[in-house]
Length: 256
Image (tube, rainbow, N blue to C red; front, side, top):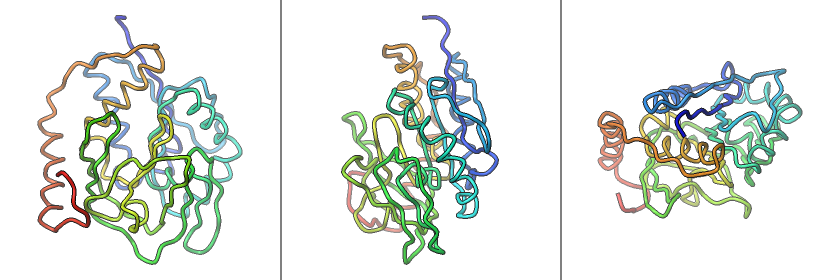
């Protein structure tokens, strides 16, 4: 196998892009390019159609209630079923904050408007009594190895997991899904949702590479080993967030 390529659909890049979420696309581009992998990024927004078999990766960023209310009807009617089919067919999805909420069953805004979601994740999101804002540190176990995830959360919505998903990580510092049960994010098949902005992937290169590997396996039907990269700067950024969180003290203890 000498030439590798992937297709990534970026959902609503013009409306759902807060707190550096576009940096996740840049990270996918760079980490693929540095390894000679061709990545075709296709923006899909209001009025566009999405074909389930046309993509290997899907990214859905965050937005405010206003933007979520704008895109919810279009997403549910025009793209939600396609995303569900893509996930069932093994496509890799990363959704952050507002995108994560709209991949659940429903998201209720602070003014009481219930927005339907695509139902990829068995989660529901409702308004909370406090806003979770600041650096978040969590511990994930996706492949039998405990790894630390860091990012920046800024949300008042509270997300509760149903039995059809598992948590992406356990919160060590921050609010996470709801500030109550110690969970952060959700995983269903190769779909991953979370509240981590900042952006997520530049400071967590191991997760970026894992998503790329899963997408390559889905396309080519076999494990593809990625050439190692010099992640010194990424690891420094990651460590800086962890260090600041340690100085503030943890909400829950963990191996970090």
